[in-house]
Image (cartoon, rainbow, N blue to C red; front, side):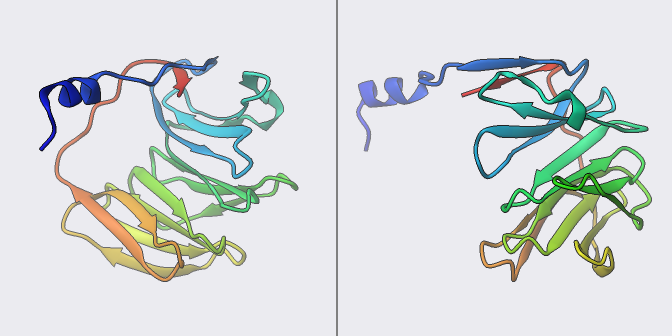
Length: 185
């Protein structure tokens, strides 16, 4: 059992922001690091997906994606080849980072809340308020599997070996902070 002083120390924050990135004009719903740890990707209600240079402490503006609606989910593949975004009206896209080629994946009928890219960089999973989880082949763009849920899908995550997908459901709405900045620890 922990002593009283150990409990006190455990509740005090030891994290301090090392950099603040400013640019988003509304809620930031999701973010993901690139594998090099020097860049980050974020999605916001301001209808943008932004890439950040963490060494310089600023946005890589030429890499900004402008969307029709809020960006609720973002993911970067573990090899840094792909970035994925999920949006307000079921929009799901990937962009191949080196070429800038954008692929659109159609199938969700409502907001996409979460996305993940498999560890082997071949599959994209998405979860939506339409009560489905979908898995896509990143190279071909083809749907590998849709799965119905009892409620909206709030989280998806591939296993480290890319052979399993966990999917979490929620029957209530989570509210975000109304900040347009990222503070990195």
